[in-house]
Length: 196
Image (cartoon, rainbow, N blue to C red; front, side, top):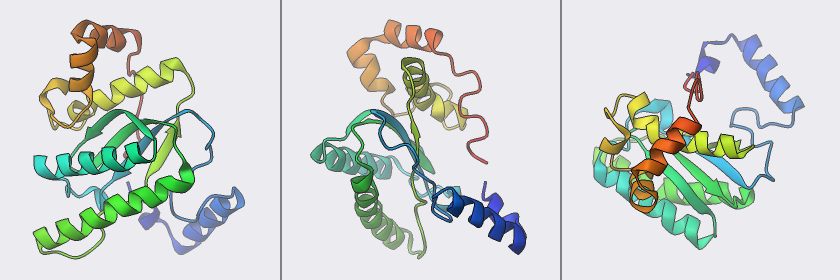
């Protein structure tokens, strides 16, 4: 992660020029596909520091996301909030509005958490997105979200992590449905090297 910092000045200039030539922002994640129905949205804490480090903060973030997204008619279909990042499986994303929503949510939380922790500085990185391309991609993404606490060693089982949609799916679809989804749409190497 943060490979950019390890580059020489010339390598940095070349990389920025390549990004600009593609129409991407010089440093933020690009959002090249904006006409898909479903997206995996990922946001990390700056330098992957554990700033969402209590159950109360994770629930506060989830409440804010659901409140603001529902108001703007963006559906959250899957979620997991970990101490240093979170993932959302969404529908009906308006990208012009999404950056504004994240600034609103993240800005107020960053101020509050910095005061609580008696620190100053950046809390969040820009969000990244992946357009969902198929039914298989959708359900594999849902499995990836639910398995994320295990992948990052925050829990031994997806069911042991509170701030995840696995509990909603368990209650509304049942354990057999979740098992079937896991078997039919295995992760394999989904998400490999995303954290670099």
